[in-house]
Length: 76
Image 1 (cartoon, rainbow, N blue to C red):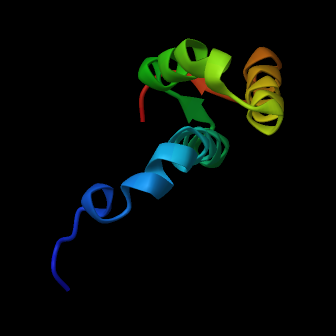
Image 2 (image 1 turned 60 degrees about the vertical axis):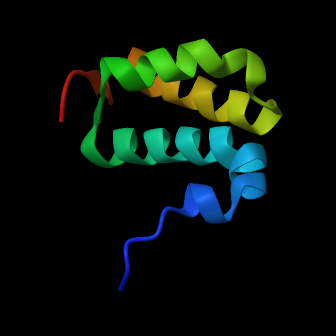
């Protein structure tokens, strides 16, 4: 299967769903591995003003999991 850069093929989809896809990936990785990286935290903190209500709810859930110790800050 050839290596295809989807950013070149679907710019309009990535423009509208780029933040949501990244936030969901960060959340799922953090929950799966029980670790979130400093870079991922910086992304979430730096982009919260662009999040819609659903994304804000997801980032609040992530904050709650970090606060209660279920997810640690570190490296994978």
